[in-house]
Amino acid sequence: MRTETILNSMNHTLRNRRWSLLWRTISLLTVFVIISQVIIYAWVQRSVSGHFEQMDSEIITHAAFNLRKRMVSVNEPIEPFTVSKSQSLIDDNHLHSSWLDYDLKTLVADKKGKLLSSDPSSFIHNLPADFSLLSLWQEHHDQQFMIKINNRHYRAIIIPNQEILAFIALPTNVHHQYLIQFNRQLSLILTAITLLLVSVAALSVYWGFAPLSTIVQKMKGINLQRLDERVAVDDMPLELRPLAESYNSMMVKLESNFESLSRFSDNIAHELRTPIATLSTQTQVMLNKPRAGDEYIEQLHHQHDTLEQLSAMINNMLLLAKTQKGLSDSQISHVDTDSLITKLVDYYEMIAEDRGITFEKSGKFERVLGDEGLLQRLFANLMSNAIYYAASNSTIMISATVLTSSTSLNAPKDDIQSPEQLWLRITMTNRLDKPLNQIEADKLFERFYRHDKTSHKYAGTGLGLSIVQAIANAHKGKVSITIKDECFFEVTVGLLMA
Image 1 (cartoon, rainbow, N blue to C red):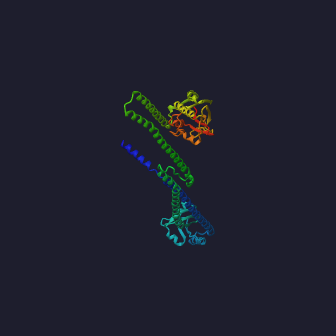
Image 2 (cartoon, rainbow, N blue to C red):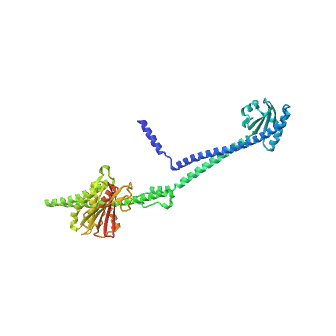
Image 3 (cartoon, rainbow, N blue to C red):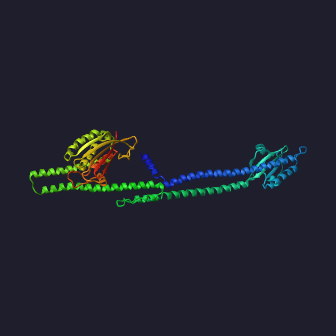
């Protein structure tokens, strides 16, 4: 158990030690640059070394060609090859090599490997004791090879003849020293370039993401008095503008929700204070002196009505909280909107009959996915509000239309998951009793908002349309109000079809 705890702690520590974006970028770029520089270094070093090898090979080949020509001209098969002839041979070749300004070394030996002469003459005395021209010939024949004599590097070739072996060697120490110095300078240059690129990359990343600090400072400074502050999108780089726009959009929603919450808190305090104060006052009045039994009964009836209003308000608030969490799978079923609305129309026709208001249905009402109880509450609230706002002796028209997700009407579009889904749009239209503009109509969805508080023909808490909107959102639908010519009130509800 203790081992598992330690391992979990280590994993948690490792997860918390993730590198910052700056260090990730620098590390990745550093690895890439180092690999690139190693490849460049190997390619340049190989190219320069190959160039020197090719140049040395051409010099040796040219010298060998001249020596072969000389060997043919001085070769006399009748007389044995003497030391004087070998010296004459290499002297001629040495003159030619001097003219080429290359420090060629030449050795001449007989077929048994006995050294006869050298150019320069001191070269033969500087040879190591184990030097054997015959062994070198047997190993390399006419091929060029590298050899080290007295800590000096040579490129050499052995040219055979009937009587002699001629050894030509070109010192390459100068090239080796140059390559060592060149590689050192190339390494320094590539290292400097790597450091420069990494530094520029680090500076670019740091400078490029510097505008993020503006957003960070804005977020740190968020408080209730500064919710209206926004980030200047035009001052941001193109890559960070979507982030700045998203931040501003979030702040707009946050400010709007906070204002709505503030209004809701004020409204609910006011709505609860009035009935509670009424109950308190009525109770104090009844307790001041003894009363008759009928007075107590009448007062209890008043208090019962007030308590029912409080209970209805609390139930509505609970319903709003419930619908904000969305629907569970167990709540979703196929709901027949035709029979649902027909039953509600039959019920509300009796209520609207006193004002001469009638209902008229049109269109094909399809089945939708949702909770039947909540949808019944949604349409009931819509109908009661339609009656409240409708003019006397008018007709409330309820129509249904099937829409695809691509239809650019008042159907919901933001929450649609697939272009093949179908939506049922149900519209209620009625003629208004009093003129209403679009701004006032949009406020009807706010909690506890009542457009006409002076009228007593409708006793409500101002939560009806708020509940409608919450239920529609819980069903991933949409509800909207449209005012046409300040005289016609149109409510549109979009629901996902089964």
